[in-house]
Length: 245
Image (cartoon, rainbow, N blue to C red; front, side, top):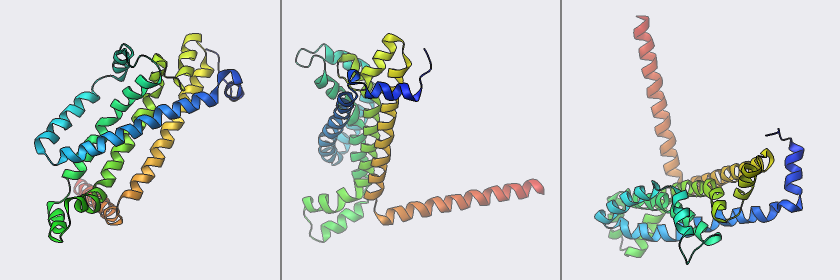
């Protein structure tokens, strides 16, 4: 492969023949639609399962098993399904399946990690089950849920190029083109495009997770980190003193 300059990358992007705008829109659709579907399905399911210990245990293990299945294998299986075929729909379905486990696991973990005394206090104040869920449980588990959405979204965005193998489109088309023609320019355009999109997703959802974390929890976390750092420094100092002695 010949080295690629910045001018060549810009020329490739600006060329109407390469449909960069259309491929960008296809990549965004393949990223956003599965993420939204995963949230809509996983959060209510996690809320229901979190109330049942056995069901929560089974769902947790099943989610881990699903994550072990290669996405490429799922795409190949869906491509052979008559009612899905190839293209956008099977790609979205496969990416949607990839995004379920982190959100489902974090929803269950966040709800089951809430102090029962907090729920009992809300119940003692006369709150209904819906009020406890909407005013107590969901706000307390929101940072954990946001972390699951963040993980799921980054995984989906990073896996979007594989959808090009079954006609899903997006930046994966450029990567396949570069591999087929043994050209570095389309490979870089597709790879850098996905990397930038994944980085932006990580940064934006990281800020959302921080915004959803109550101030008290952030202060407590910072205090714990500071205390851990002080303990580590004291241990190092004691070790240095003993060596010097």
